[in-house]
Length: 227
Ligand SMILES: [Zn+2]
Image 1 (cartoon, rainbow, N blue to C red):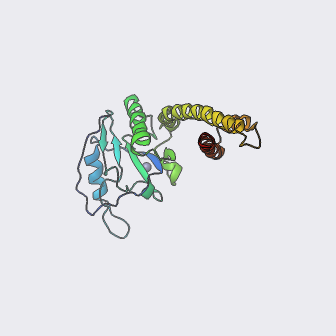
Image 2: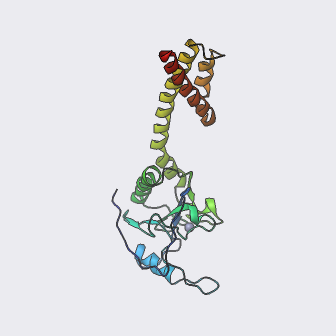
Image 3: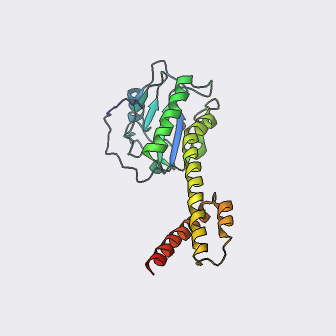
């Protein structure tokens, strides 16, 4: 994953993000005649004023995907951005450069959005709960009706889901083995419990219960050995 490092001159100190729950995609909208990159967006944001006259701090997105597919750093990844009112303190903002009210992003941009999105949710912030566009989190038409959000979301999460399924079937086996052992040892009131476990193993809360049971089974086995 090649990410172009940048360092921007912010007006004020940045605030570290305590949590990262969301990955939010944006577009530029109406495009200027100059080529848009991180420096250009930083200049726009740094020179913008709030209604009370305070200047914005500087680039508000954490990363950018330029028109040629280059991935550039925006506001440092671990700092609170300024891109989606209401969720800035818990979200990572990515600007895909273009106006997707008018047409779709370039193929290379979609490819890079998927690659970079995977990197963000799998390596940087595995706790991310939801991937969406600006308009999913705040009142906005951003990132435009031609932005292929669903395709990008599906491809970002695909690998992660495969891993989860593998873990579950492995977990399923382990849980069932342990429950059977527990039944053999006479520590279980309902010896058919493993059948229930096999059915419920995709339910997160029940899996936790069965994992607890499997731990008890291991403990029971050890006690049996010691006696
Ligand atoms: Zn936006």
